[in-house]
Amino acid sequence: MKLLADENVPSSIVRALEEEGYDIRSIRLDAPGISGIEVMRYAHKDTRVILTFDLDFGELAVKDRVYPSAGIILLRLHQMNPHQMAEYTRGVIKSRQDREGHLSVIENDRIRMRQL
Image (cartoon, rainbow, N blue to C red):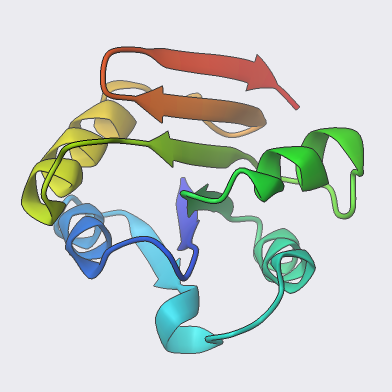
């Protein structure tokens, strides 16, 4: 699975996923400041699952269908420091290989998945 980290994803999460062997790109490094629609276009062009904290991506992918999406992982993690978020996110993503084609919402105490 190829990932695209939105600008709001801490670098600790990006590094943890790189260390795990994931092919991950970062908007913060590649194209800072672009709009959500442009992030969707970037992800679509390279068939990447978007990793984000931004609720708008669920709306763009499910309701507006701006670009076909390879998948979205929406992080809703609270009261964790960047290292804890990185380790938790790494474990959750590693636990399942079927995130593509889904909107996955990762919370502190549960994970929800909906097919796109």
